[in-house]
Length: 214
Image (tube, rainbow, N blue to C red; front, side, top):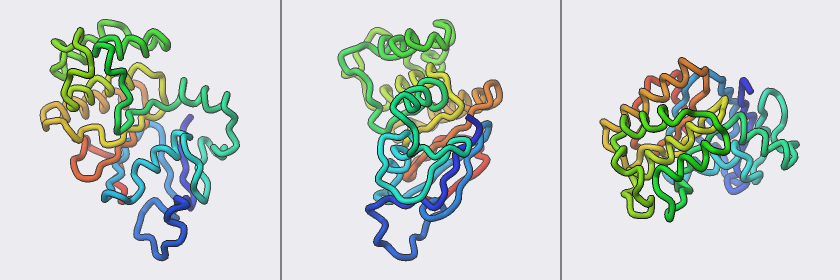
């Protein structure tokens, strides 16, 4: 998948609003593989809704979202399964980790399904992000910032053309945020992925190709 296009989309909940002051809603936006995008938003402007629309979890919007010119509302369940297995990796704002499993298990359970990364690479990311000592600790006993780093590594174990991250550094210090940004920059360079990051204030530290106001 090479491009995602947003054509005049508006959440149903905003459809009665006039003069939406947004570079996304009711506009035309193209997101390309191999480029990085920051979508900045105020709370309550539909940031997480946008992520759910792109990932196919919700369809309560007007307008059209296309993947390589195909309207995503036309996709079957099997089609969405393939998209999520091969083309889009996501880091949810609420993370959706398994609290009873260890940090390592949360990542390995994903990588066992995909076979996408080596154990050496996974352990290297744990070390780079300062959580190598948390490998055997249940996620439910970790801080939210530590959990964010686990969820980030898990996302990288999914084959993808685009990586979609909803407020990925809300609980991270600047040093770990920079490491995360450096890892993503390498993924863009090495694999040509597209990176889409949302923020309501604390932004992931990257040199973005495009910054968009929601």
